[in-house]
Length: 256
Image 1 (cartoon, one colour):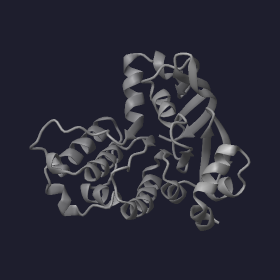
Image 2 (image 1 turned 90 degrees about the vertical axis):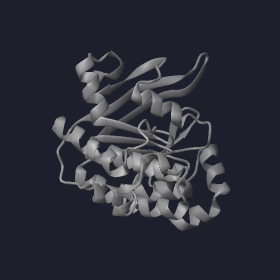
Image 3 (image 1 turned 180 degrees about the horizontal axis):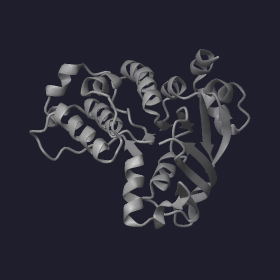
Image 4 (image 1 turned 180 degrees about the vertical axis):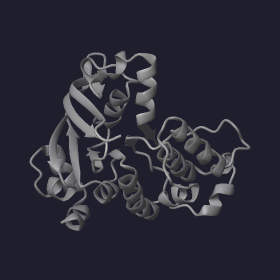
């Protein structure tokens, strides 16, 4: 597992005639500490996630996994890429079988991991604990889950497959703020144990600060500041960073 790399090389993309991402370079290596990507709404964070996933075609540059362009991979390598790099957004999970329980869903994901040679000793109880849910929650039918519960189970399911890299695009929008903080602590521990690197794309500064030792601030299609959240906000030079720091003065004080 160690050494797998997802890279963006001079990545451009967006709407026809209107680039949203303008020359991004990014490297994520399996085993790295979580990396945050923050920035104002509408700046292109979700576009960047789609480009990294390969569901949106770049207008220039490319995304590679272990040196191979993800949009030109043969079927077998594409399957390996989808197993190694998992993407979770706020609406990643759909339920097709109303009888399926949370525990059965997680056991199926663990079985997929074993078949792919990604065996790990994590139990369904530990996976639920990682997203701040009790073991008995496993008896719940998937169809009965609330939006926040579904987001948490979707993340536990992704972890069960033991991805090398996990890209999280606003994955906790329906989870209450207090629970997000507890999840950040637990997720960091299990991802470190599994050797899973993470990219956390979010507007939630506190969540990103708790999970990610370092962040990139996205504005005007580029990373305009990088470093710990506290340093990025305290030393704001770019107007977009200053605007965010001025809009969240309590966050700036808390992170110092």
